Length: 223
Image 1 (spheres, rainbow, N blue to C red):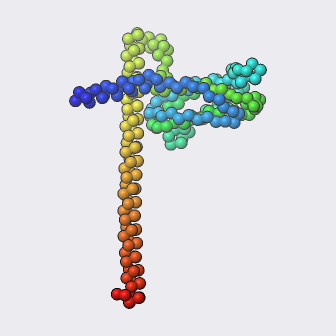
Image 2 (cartoon, helix red, strand yellow):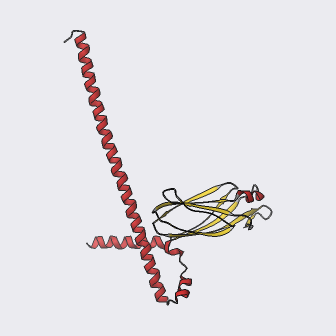
Image 3 (cartoon, rainbow, N blue to C red):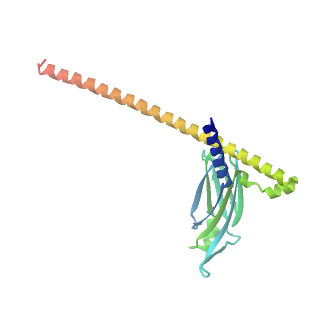
């Protein structure tokens, strides 16, 4: 019983650690017609906020500088069923938001509006992308000012939302486990039926060979 409680506590701490770090910040380079996609595993009913800014390489200064306002980025998000849940064009710097309704891998793709990027033909575009998932999307300073919360009330609210996010993650892990179990059972069933079919084929071939040999021997009058 103690071991079970210990494992439960360890699991909870691990999940808390995961959700304290569910903020992905990175940058990448794209060409004029290039498209970059990222996969995020997201529980259902979870808000995601993405912030990005673009920079163009200046050959004279040999460094990346903020892109002009004429340069835009196209953002497209697909859910695990390949259904488009966000498809919109933004400026050289922007923010996109969506809420997941299906648990699983969501595909987030970005590419430039090449017709305007053609003005910078041969250049490279650097995109800084910051993705926030779940309760990390909340601006608690604004929430405290709007609802006039004390520091203790704000901490309690943060904990409640973190626990809610952990519960969503646990539900998602159970969903993944169930999908994996269904896949395993389906694979095992197919292997079983394939073994049965192989056995029947071998029995049928053996029976046919026996009849063929019997007919051969009878034709040769050996039996």
